[in-house]
Length: 313
Image (cartoon, rainbow, N blue to C red; front, side):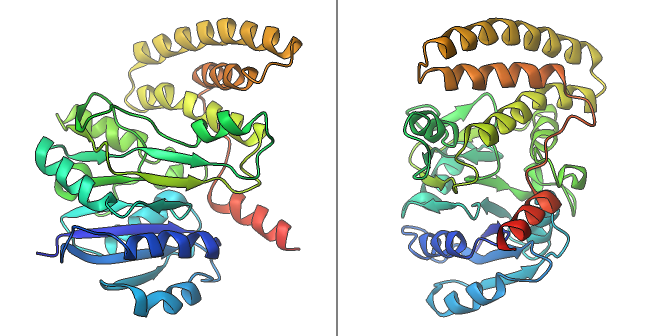
């Protein structure tokens, strides 16, 4: 029974998109369960259409192209959901490549755990990074979890995930379009799922690789992302009007900023490569403090499109 839709949002990454799609075409152990692969082109100019058409004859399942011309990560995910009625939804980002057993591992984990949302490990790749930064960046862009498949206490991001549509993705547009530019579109979604008694699972064998392009394989970019990750808990508590929770996260952030900031300064003095990890922890602490509107760094949507236009000029 074809009960799985795979959604791949993309924005002007033709080479990465082709790599992601070819990895999906090579999936094993899933039989006829894939109802469609849905590519959501978030470029106003529809630049991914040619890549999708060029690969259509290589796809073992229906390959659907959707043009979502308003750039934004939440808008793109919602557009992908609107294009399929599959009861199970898998997400793969366009900078990821799935291992051959990826989807089968996600499906097996969901069946075995009964989880509403299942996540898998990510192996980060930063081939263009400076030598001293590369080990940390590849951990930063990666994702680690338990050694064995099972239920877990907290969710991860949408990239490399499988969700039960009825419980984890309710309504026609479950991703908040207000997060289009900054990301974090899944934080509130998963917080609400947890509040409803939803369960999260881990598929230890559902590996993907994530490739950081040159402009992302930098200290500045990664620390901006770390700051945004740090904002997540405070912002989620604020969205729920849990002001005691906000205060708690801000106290935690202040402590992290002080401790890890001091460690960062000491390691910087001796030029230790380990300083990058301390910078990361400090940035996450600062993010918990400065979670308010106006402090959100923008990585997606219009900001990413402007960067691509500038690089092309």
